[in-house]
Image (cartoon, rainbow, N blue to C red; front, side, top):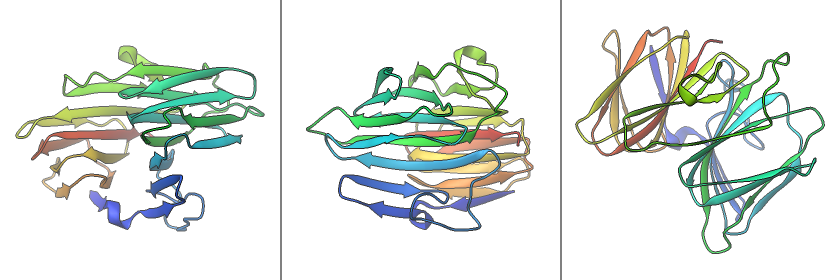
Length: 234
């Protein structure tokens, strides 16, 4: 079963220094029916103004995955560690008790555009504080996160597999699913999503879809397409 959630249905925020679209309840945007989906707690699409920053803050036990679409970000923690990520990078921050993180758009002339996911983290697993991975945009599929770091992916502290799909018009990709639920997110482009039993959803830039009890999902690109498939075991 698939149920779409369009970009227009998401929560919206415009603080001047930050423009955001919230798929699930976050900050001032609250919907008791949308507190996350399985272990996917947050999916935000955000644009930070030139030179803008999130001040240091602590987090619940989650893995924070940032997909940088445009610009360059700098991340610092309260223990003196820092790193940078730019266009085409995926950064995974494994939050720790008592450790605060800040985020800065290092470019003072251009905005920073990114997608951020929070995944519930198993408290018994310890991962490096920071992991980083470049996207390979010249092939249709890349596994960017998994529980065991398979195929060079980032290692998350949960039974979750995150796939990055890049297709040209007319191309299609079928993604097997391991969990009983999944989230499909369009980064940009128009496409059809088809379930194994023939259901269809038309999705456009910024749209998403809940997927339940499917063994696979097939994407057919109508325009140049980038999308994420978040395969959720729990």
